[in-house]
Image 1 (cartoon, rainbow, N blue to C red):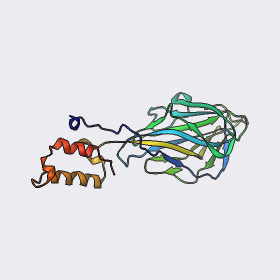
Image 2 (image 1 turned 135 degrees about the vertical axis):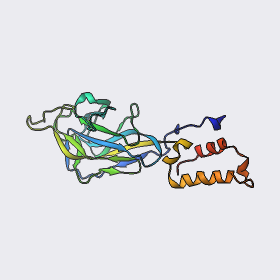
Image 3 (image 1 turned 90 degrees about the vertical axis):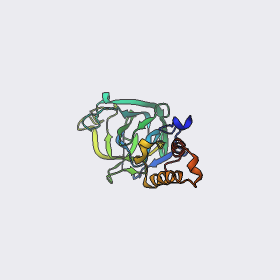
Image 4 (image 1 turned 180 degrees about the vertical axis):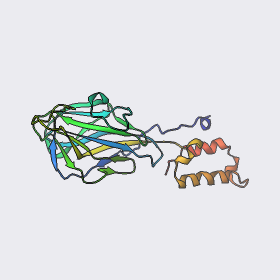
Length: 239
């Protein structure tokens, strides 16, 4: 019966969490940083789960926001109504070590190909709350699962505020980079006939050879029905 009721995605997060750490040139400090994060669609994953972000600086009363699942002409809006607050806590100063902000109660979930904005802000008075960098390259961080892109710094003590702390000019600074760490895990897709082309060439070759063996009368696999072969492949890791 289990062979006929195959799962379509893993019911576990990978055992070792992935830690994405950016470069850190300490170019600037100010009230906030907003940056896009994209989930790659290279590996056969169902989604990634961001469990925490880490920052440093004078910190103070911090909030973390994530853009809502809305299609606004492909843009990430800076209007508060398009964002959801998922974290709020006051932290002490930490200029040398990163301070981890635990998002496990409301983690950020990204599907392959999906982009979401992350906005970290402090209402601490002054300009030392959060360390960030000038844009140095097209991608702030890039690994097998996630791409962190350059974003905007915020120089207002009010979340999403349009007035900078000195009272004039623009509150958002383009071409800035997040400085810190993002910890996340990945939920993998499991093999099924309909998912076959989502897997790599080596896995597809494995599946083909397994069915070739099943078709040979002298092979022990010849006694297994197709559904059992499907189940075996369903339980194999993508790699």
